[in-house]
Length: 377
Image (cartoon, rainbow, N blue to C red; front, side, top):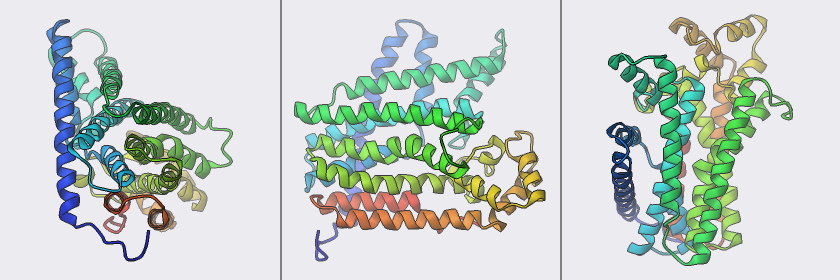
């Protein structure tokens, strides 16, 4: 890449992005229509699971499929053909269903009541149980339904990915990335569960444990594997894949650090999640680790009392929020996000063998995923 390389016009990026979204919606709609017919032959109740998944997918940002797409465009070094867009969109639809499964299960594990501004799936199923006056525990019913729906999303993601068109060697390479992503995100989820319980003994300290969770739970299925999948499907060689990987680790880590900040200093209307959710859920984030490290004895007692207390009142949660700001933890994490975003941009600019159109698309995504300047203090 040279300094004189032209920047593709924003309209070109926007048009391609709109085309991608349209194609992903077509693939997803066709797949779910087939699954609705299949489950309808079992029972009307079974077919209703597809309606639940469609409702859950509404409002998704399609961030991961977009990373996949622009990684592919970067590898192509030109504008994709209609057939190439279709192939990348199919892969993106599969990624989005893996994301749906991860969120469905994550909400159960974290006891999260809200997702995208609406009741989480296990809460919706619990309420349906209560409204219908079914027998047994409504809460256990809700959890079971959400787990089953997540399992179905994973199954259907695999079925979509199994039909990716393209040259055999490239499809095989993309599928290998897809399979690695699924293993890594589940292993990362296990690390997260261990860390929450204080059982991540191989990590040297709380902050390193939280960073390891980010590296293996968030980074692989948010940025790293999606961008490698798209690039592999479009014929990228190892040097290009390695360059994209280095960039993706920085951007993916910055994304999760920013997401941790959003729970404390974000805009609830924009995130669709209650502010302070990570506090009452007791999420062992880098932000919390730095707050604990800087807190005095009295402040430590406040953290011990409030963090992880689902019944904590608004005043107590606000006190922890204020402590996170006062200790400098919020500012230091925000600084890390900016530093990693800058490092990612430098790596992308220095990468050889990537096209300018795809590079511009990836940078635009990275800016969106790592912006901390709009967060409230």
